[in-house]
Length: 308
Ligand code: NAP
Image (cartoon, rainbow, N blue to C red; front, top):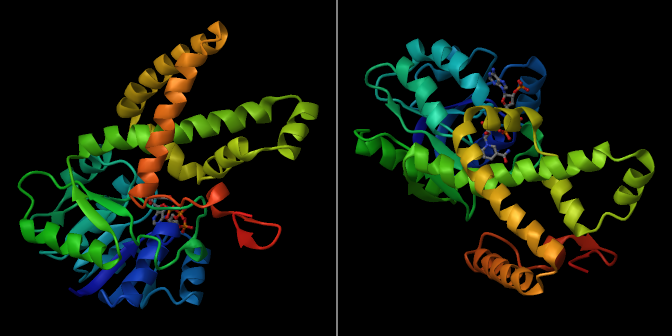
């Protein structure tokens, strides 16, 4: 499978990883890149990520067979209005946004006839941003979820599936609503918890804070990695997946109260039972190849060897 012209709107971590991977694996002939700021465009050009560079998204999508929005979800409504009249009949319009029902709602009303909308979400990323942060094998061995509506042309779904498989991903298709509910608990609420814990530390008085930072053990340190994620992207996630996040947050808070009670009552049995269950979940994530079993997440210590 080879796409003749791919247009990437937004060239940060995800967009630049798609560009690198697609090129390296021969999945596309031409890559057009559009972004908002001239500095970012120049960075993308210096990194040689594409063939056509422009600050005009409408120009980038001209003649493109596959268009992927790779900017924060909050930019989609403006972008679709800009690019819709320029999309080629038969083209596939997709995205990589971390929420999906909102994406369908804002894009669908502007879709020209004959253009196929197949939203997507690669479940891969890091806490880094910008064109230099991407790498070609970011999607290797990771999932990509597609959320086409009923009635979407099968061939368009198949082409996009093959594209993501070409980047090394496994592809699963589900409804946008189901995606948003699953991601609310597996990704969005954990980010909210991390932002909250790190925010609490930031609010502590100066003396305690410096000790927390000085002695930060892996628990807090791992939260800071998540809480260093891009503020604009995550602001948009919580603005656009509000219902599913509130539903899952409600459950989370109920369960937290149960744990709080177990701690207060000294209920060791209840605590041990939960911690045993959660340890088994981590095991199954490692067995599914979605995480490393290396001690301390494979961090390099002292001797320069991971995990030491
Ligand atoms: P990023 O590194 O911050 O890159 C965002 C890109 O969007 C930048 O090139 C930025 O360019 C561009 N942009 C911003 N506003 C724009 C506009 N109005 N028009 C055109 N381009 C615009 O972000 P990212 O991590 O790649 O995330 C991009 C998307 O991927 C988001 O929708 C996010 O939900 C999704 N996603 C992220 C992750 C992750 O872990 N990071 C994982 C899966 C999915 P300028 O510098 O020119 O503004």
